[in-house]
Length: 325
Image (tube, rainbow, N blue to C red):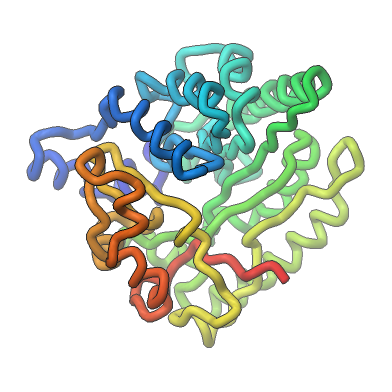
């Protein structure tokens, strides 16, 4: 697919052209032999979850099965983000592999209608995606009834002005499908072509978003799952236009001291912000020359933890969450 907001795969992106010019390759792929070492280091550090990827479709990765097998062997859970196409296997075959070791499967859903969803996730067959999710949820429920292990299912959204008018409909769809929660984040404006789609574009768009938030919580109260529970809404919060370019005291970084990111080329990063912008946070080493232990104990990382609210990138972060009181 070529989702319009994707840093790497969007029709507006120059990422692959630049990558080819600099490296002679068009696609980054993590070497299979790294995966064993990453799981070993992660287990030693007490890591609880591993996310295979949040960009592109991780189930297309040639060695993705290894993630699920190593998760079982190392008692580490997988946290999966997928577009719901389930390539190369049936939904049942994927479910049998994924669900027993996955704490959360996040499906990228960006509309309640075929027209909207397919205009954003270019290449999507929306009706088939929803059929796949329905089937996957049924396998999740059956596995829970059989084993007692509950694998959460989430809709992952990108908040944009050309899709969030359908948020109440997305909530209804999630409830009908027995999806546990809906979460998402505001648009990273990687390209000039999509800047006007951000709800942080101007004061009028902020007001528009705040109206949508109010409607969303009303919809969550009205449309409930088959078990009578509400669909949990996360990161769907009102915006304060006066504080868009600051990091308020009541906010806490969702990544520092909680997550690390290793790119396919080995670059270790503290978060999932856009690649070029993230470079301004510091150099945290390159795997496998540097270990995960080296990265989190480096002076650069410790300094970032202390002073991240002063960094320009962190002031505009779309992923930040309020502290739960």
